[in-house]
Length: 572
Image 1 (spheres, rainbow, N blue to C red):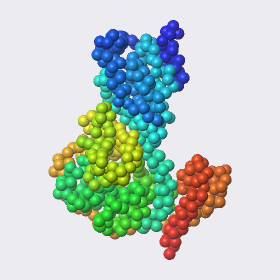
Image 2 (image 1 turned 120 degrees about the horizontal axis):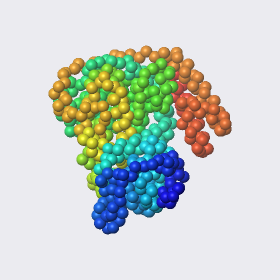
Image 3 (image 1 turned 120 degrees about the vertical axis):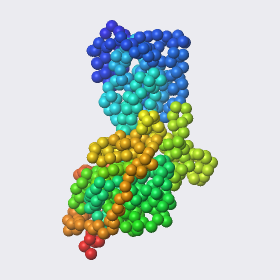
Image 4 (image 1 turned 30 degrees about the vertical axis):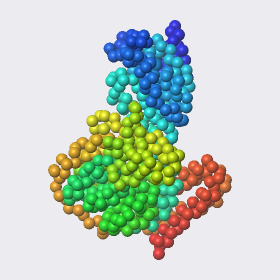
């Protein structure tokens, strides 16, 4: 290779991305769209398709402004969209000593041209990586992120003008990868053991309640209104109240109190949370309400006296596959960790032709984090500081009292919230603040809706995140065209489970659990149970900590006791 600059740049790139290095080396790139010029400060500038890549007033000054807003924190990944002449990534590499930097340059000709004429010092840093292929870039994100990673993006103004929609797309995909890891950790790892315990404790109540399939297509051709906890809900309470005879109302557990206070009676309350949410129903006569509950929903909620409770036993969560087998349930219900998805799926199963979403903002609006009556969140706001959004108390001193004036705990709480902040696209194509787990939910809700083209989905969560597949219409316009519908009394729906089969499944499972307890002191012995649905999370913790053995034995004994109680209830 005669070009020593290109040779040196490719030497470092080849260490982690041989494919890109070979592609640049072996292809004859088109440099006709690229040219060099100077800034007002006599720095080199790059022209691509008649567009100045760096600020004409000063390339380094422009990059310094961007880098000045960045915090260097552990386990962070800063995406730099576009290499330019390398000023931005070089300055960033000088500042960031703890995190990593991933450069994504979408244009191979521009990338090849720059690498052949400019030595990029940052490339020699083992925390800096350059990619041109989207799938390889996202694969790298997947490999080096975990649930604690902080993800952010930077770009020059010229790249924003040239590649605005691709910047949004690529960052959204990266956010979805991180969001899924956060969800998986919070549920499959952190809460799976708890959820299995709750599911077995709930089993007595579960077999009393009919499956959601028992009311399949019961509202065929009608209209459903799904109410979630986003800021847009509070703006439409009067309209909901005055038109509630025109739709069947599905309410997520967070908003039930708000609805009842405003004389709105939900027809279905959906709750899939394992945490204790009993306070959300304080002062409410739940005997007048129908509930839809996951198997692992907190036992205090399963124990509520309701008009009727229906089992929403998704096919991909914790112990649900085992319970579904016991109850001989065969459907495609899923639960991705968000109650709105479960409500949406429930409405589809019931046969609704039109489904309206309200409060599904999945983003912060005008500084508000949630609609009213959401506890601490009422006292927080999301504001733009510099180039990044930040969640902070509306009144610091008042909010500090909630933490008993412990500034350290308050700071840790706010840091946790802000670590998961991101931006998503709204219906106008603008970037608005949101959370990483929300970006994951947005993607799954969009995919669900796009796969149900026979249903008319309308998102009335004005100003919130864009959910693909929905019409975006103001709620006041939608209700004008709706006709009154008759609500169906579901209190007499019966169960029809094979109790003999359930008892056999319980007996065989208890036998396996007892064998596991007897083998728990020997890794080789207990690892043979690794594929058992109940034991998977316990084995995961055992493999990572010997000190867990005594506690896990007690947990398994509790599960055996729960199953035994359920069997006693069935055979009595």
